[in-house]
Image 1 (cartoon, rainbow, N blue to C red):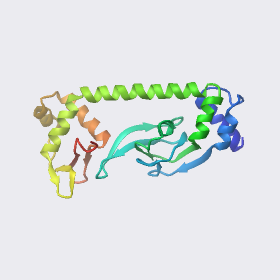
Image 2 (image 1 turned 90 degrees about the horizontal axis):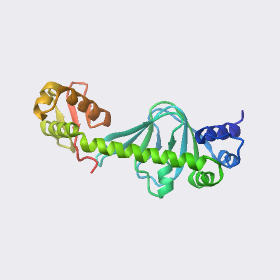
Image 3 (image 1 turned 180 degrees about the vertical axis):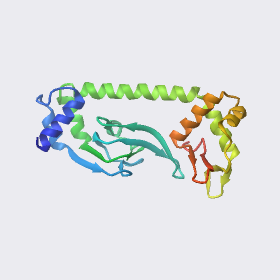
Image 4 (image 1 turned 90 degrees about the vertical axis):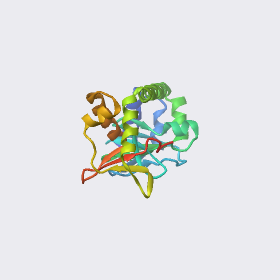
Amino acid sequence: MDQLEEAKAQWSVFAGVPSQKDGFTELALASRRIQLNPGDSLVTQGDGSQSVYLLLEGSLKTVRYSKNGHEIWLASFGKGALIGEMSGLTGAPRSSTVIAVSQVVALAVDYSEFESAIHSAPGFGLRVSKLLAERVRNTSIQLEELATLQTSARLHSELFRLGELDATDEERATIANPPSVSELAVRIHAARESTSRAVSYLHKRGFLKKRDDGALDVISPQSLD
């Protein structure tokens, strides 16, 4: 299978319709195959580019950076994910940075060609609409969780208060001897199990970072304001 036919097949799999249908040839012709090494950026927060990407191999993570450069995790993506369509739809700069976690292979296409496929390829527009609806739903769930995860919010604030502020970075405090989960649970008046989950959640998001010497860096809860 040559690269054109492979690109047609990949876009058709994404849309869930046979590649023989009209509309995919133009999209495949406009697609560029790109490869990334772990740590490479696919898109960068604040950039004005409007390319759309279809992830063929590997995994990606989406992060945002505070004004002092602290990385906060937002989401992860695997094979078959569509990346970058929101900037194309809105015309706004990239709202986050997407980084390769592993070796990545993807198809890149300019948004104008992507938009043409939405209008011409059967099933393509519907698939994109469903994807956007799923993302809105997931965002709503995440916002609800953030609003109701009082344990995480209390824990985050308490840890930042416990730390010693960095003289060169107002967004970071360091706890030389971090308290145990049981101690933290008592401090924030929460069950140990929910406190443990909150610790894991904050580590995953990048708000907590353990140092090699056992100290704990805590990024300010207001770092992305």
